[in-house]
Amino acid sequence: MTERPTSPPEPQPVSGIVTRSAIFLVATVRDDEAAHARVRAWCADAAAYVRSVGKRVPSGNLSCVVGISDNAWDRLFGDPRPAELHPFREFGSGKRHAPATPGDLLLHIRAEQMDLCFDLATLMLGKLGDAVSVVDEVHGFRYFDMRSMVGFVDGTENPEGDEALEFTVMGDEDPEFAGGSYVLVQKYLHDMTGWNALPVEAQERIIGRTKLSDVELDEGVKPSWSHSALTTLEEDGKEIKILRDNMPFGRPGSAEFGTYFIGYARSPAPIEQMLENMFVGRPPGNYDRLLDFSNAVTGGLFFVPSAPLLEALAEREAPVAAAGSAAIKTLIDATSTATPVVDATVSSLTSPSVAPAEGSLQIGSLKGVSQA
Ligand code: HEM
Image 1 (cartoon, rainbow, N blue to C red):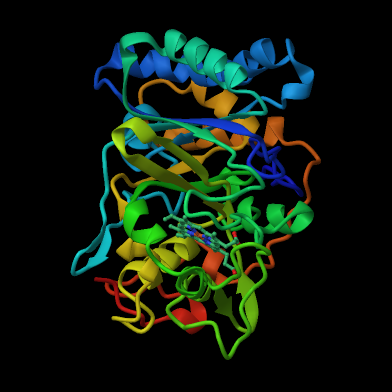
Image 2: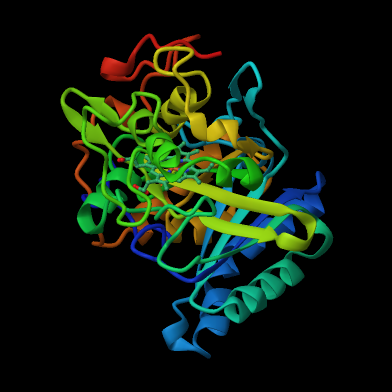
């Protein structure tokens, strides 16, 4: 019997990074074996590309996280597959809609300086060549003191350190994919004219925090439809968090003002529950008023393999179910490292063992909130 690793393999650089610049690239992979082979080979070299560009400016903190969609996983790697990887689930009600848009690969490139992000994006896309077509590219910038496009500090309630790893990096719940994460992205465009016409107090009730000082509104004052209320999840008395690294972007000359939302977690379930709360409402109808001024125009869900698994995926041939499973298990066992220790204490919100039933995400106390 092969022993399972006692601690998960090293994650990709998902957590602990706050930089001033980022590039988000979403690409589709051409559907033929030559393209698949090229992308598989690229997976093995992705970390080396980051080293090549990043070493030139060590203080630039360059990193890249690679995510793979449900559809791409099957075509490129076959079985075994991450238990909770599925197509982006659309949410909506009335005018509010979170659409699913095409995308097989996500590259989340971060650095202190945009030139580093730009150079790495250029190198990586050059190596992928015509095996991929970029369907969305967003260059994000840090806006003063971590302000979102709507002027409020963004990221305050993010988990940090060990807590961030606990909420984002998978442990034993899907052993073949330990060290991995899920990432959900959405591109939002804002009606800044409408937003700026609101008094600051009204904006603060919508976000649930004060604008200048970034302090949470008191319980009696904070509306149940505020962004912060609807994105706060609890299960069995414990708060379930996700890790966000949203970035503002835009082109004032074209009246484009946006937020690129990116959320990491060890299961898609909590992020999807937040989306449902925002778009449909908790209870239905009690929706996030930020959406009266924000329109989601893209949506994608991706699996982020651990660093050694991303490299090892290159060894996969055309997807073959059983043989692939054994091979990948051996590779995970061989490449597992001692960092970091993640204990699988996060409850069923992060457990992939139960597939969501129709109409409910089946997550503890949040069960039964229906999906639109
Ligand atoms: C329109 C795009 C969005 C903007 C401008 C935005 C902005 C903000 C701001 C300003 C905060 C308060 C500070 C903080 O704790 O970070 C916040 C909190 C939060 N947001 Fe968003 N957000 C957006 C979309 C989303 C989406 C799509 C999700 C999840 C699916 C989400 C999840 C959260 C969570 C979990 C918190 C922390 C809540 C708390 O613990 O108080 N956000 N967001």
